[in-house]
Amino acid sequence: MEKEIKISEIKNAARESFEEVKGLQGGKNADYIPYLANIDSNLFGLSVTLLDGTCFNFGDTEYKFGIESVSKVPTAILAMIQHTPKGVLEKIGADATGLPFNSIFALLLENDHPSTPLVNAGAIAACSMVAPQGDSRDKWKAITENITELCGSAPELIDELYESETATNFNNHAIAWLLKNYNRIYDNVDMSLDLYTRQCSLGITCSQLAIMGATIANGGFNPVTKKQTFEKEIAPKITSMIASVGFYQHTGDWLYTSGIPAKTGVGGGVMGIMPGLFGIAAFAPPLDEAGNSVKAQAVIKSFMNKLDLGIFNGDKVKIIPD
Ligand code: GLU
Image (cartoon, rainbow, N blue to C red):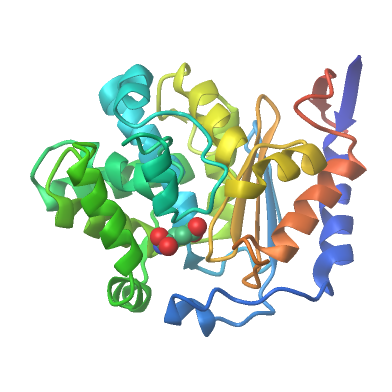
């Protein structure tokens, strides 16, 4: 079915969803990373970026929070830019694990394969793939410059979060060394783990994430800076990964109820991609037991339902001016 949605309808749906979800209680901040435990749990933001560059922002959309696992998306894109989507498929994989983000069991089960760059094992492997090999400074530069291109503005390292994660990431050490054991890490182990930990500790805003989502939804063309950031063929590859594992063991439930591929992070952020239409991001620190933001999930679902949108709906949707 052909379906037209006015820009003002999108803005109103976002505002109404934000107001509805604002008072929602439940969940608690991630507590296994000390810095995250202390973030104000009342912070809440919702941003939508359309493919003509229009941005709608409600609430705390300029607050810099820990990007955490949402950082796995841009670095997977970078690995695809540098090594092609096929190279990433061969070296890491594109399969869902159906298990938590930090699962060691998943790595053992997949017969030495990290499965996807969107879980910890595959994300550490993706950091190891980033060129130039062996040079931590230049690898870091490539990682942050890529995020800057995708968002149209730079992320900022939260030093306290980086220290907090570095002091407590024992599980990720185990994953990194298991990858080494299976020849699935492609650079120095400690350096690759450190790059992963550092990228998770980048501060990002809700509005930046919505622009990144819109850039992916727009085939790599950043609608705000008007720059092509990656080859168009990468967009469906990264979106399929997000659709299959963006919410870890709850990805099926998420896609079934929301209709939009999205990636979560334990910092409380969720970034959604509606191919050909928009990027959306929400942020609120309290998480459910699987590590996904309670309010961010609720507000994105509400928005999608209000507009009756979903990637599987089969509608030809066009966003039109008022
Ligand atoms: N830095 C976190 C970790 O590796 C990220 C987890 C997440 O956001 O899902 O444990």
